[in-house]
Image (cartoon, rainbow, N blue to C red; front, side):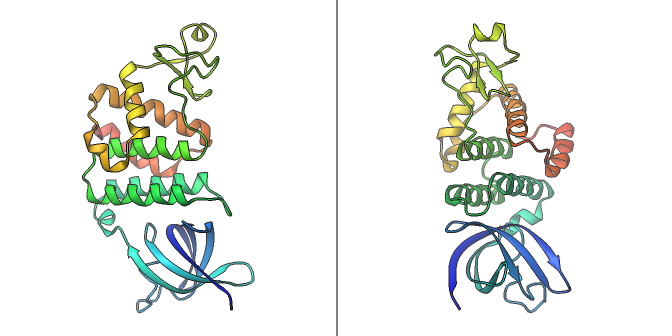
Length: 251
């Protein structure tokens, strides 16, 4: 029986029968794969922690007729702290849903895997403002997925300029000349600086980024519209998050 070894993060799962699950794993080595976890829901199962959403484990898998099956697994990180806070849990669900949407089988997902795992780590430790972490994750994920927003040249003509306008559909800043014929969103120049800082700063340095609340609110709104437009999906996990935002600023 041939086996493969992967490090995988559980994006979601489907319960099967009384004790089994089919997991969707995002792996460093083999992209996104479906895995059958036989008996993982039994209380005495050694696999129970490794088969929860968000968990990162080292897996030894073997191929069955249509799916991989778990031969053995070793839990590396459960991000248990996320389950203690409803808001953090909701953001974690959004992050994994985004990653699941932009990836597919046989795709090289190593960088997305690392981004998601690190983001969940910082989210669980609550050492970075949740709004800044969310904006950073979204813009970095879009960049890795081939949808990096154009921030330095006009998305319509390619001209260098001092930009104060953005077009969601074209996915970038728009010069004043092109803005005469293209619908745009007004954008503060400091919002553009904020985006650049998020895009090129490692997650570990996000605490060094300071942003005025007005700029953050504008950046968050534009980025949310950008993600939804280019991924083409409304995310269920954002419904609860937006409800919380309406009650007070999340940052």
